[in-house]
Image 1 (spheres, rainbow, N blue to C red):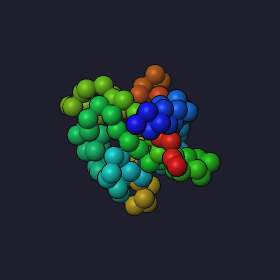
Image 2 (image 1 turned 180 degrees about the vertical axis):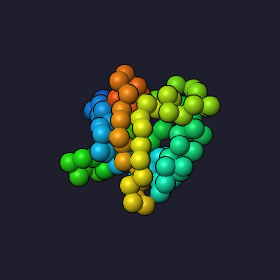
Image 3 (image 1 turned 90 degrees about the horizontal axis):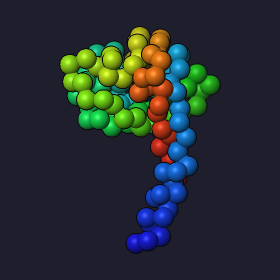
Image 4 (image 1 turned 90 degrees about the vertical axis):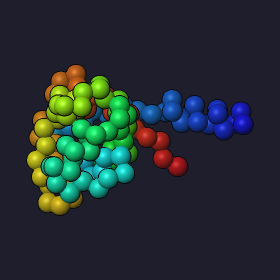
Length: 112
């Protein structure tokens, strides 16, 4: 039991911060595939305070991230801090990231 706990803690400590950038594409929020802008905002609005994202970076790297959101069910844009546009049917492309928003403080989810 102790070995599993130590491994979990060491993986968590290795998580690096990632600031979402203009041009990144969000393809998943929690376990939901994002196809349209409407899907994205609905997922953000109805999420708990921790969300998980799958992002294709501007460098072409796929990242799994998590981020803590303030509780603000009625206004998803200020809650997360990005503006998006559609990106084919494969997610939403980030067009703007608000300074000091939760979108600037995402944590990489360690993968095996």
